[in-house]
Amino acid sequence: MPHRIHPSILNANLASLDEEIRRIPSADAVHLDVMDNHFVPNLTIGLPVVENIRANHPETFLDIHLMITDADRFAPAYAELGCESVTFHAEAAKAPIRLARELRRLGSRAAMALKPTTPIEPYADIITEFDMILLMTVEPGFGGQSFLDSVLPKIRRTRELVRKTGQEIWIQVDGGVSVDTIGRAAEAGADVFVAGTAVYRAGDPDAMVNQLRDLAITACAH
Ligand code: DX5
Ligand code: ZN
Image (cartoon, rainbow, N blue to C red; front, side):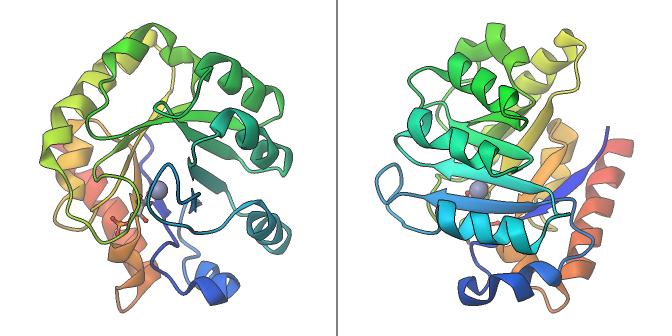
């Protein structure tokens, strides 16, 4: 199982994004949190900023996390920009199957996110429509919140559903991932880890990326 670290730039310096992205060369992707002040009570970046990041970092895997209400309408544009992965929320999408197929048709990986209290079971039969399931380990909207251990059983159940498909569908966790929590998430079955505060508040963000990945690998080896 690959263990991927996708730092979130939400708590980096948003006015110096190019520089902040260059500080994490060991990262497997950059996680970009798009918020519309409607689906979540916070407002960040949107399509024009992502378009510039794409142009300035053509080799970087861009992992887009859309926390927006009208996902059906706005998600495909991020795939059209050439973003490698586009995640929309299950609670927002009106037609998740149609949207996932549209994202794949446009050349992006398709991913669906679940808030901490949204169960995976209603989606069990359509899990192969996705390349990744994002299980939020905080309520979406802000960085710097505490990891919710109550999501661990859902990570385990999702890993079991993925195993049964025989396909390589990534399980991402986002929120409160740090040196103290990544082992538990990895042991439960997550293989893609978003970390914002832990990476950007570290003295050496790139060293933290490598440390987090090592901890995830070690936790799974047991
Ligand atoms: C929260 C965002 C996260 C956030 C994570 O809604 O989706 O990506 O930046 O930040 P930390 O790692 O600080 O919890
Ligand atoms: Zn996120």
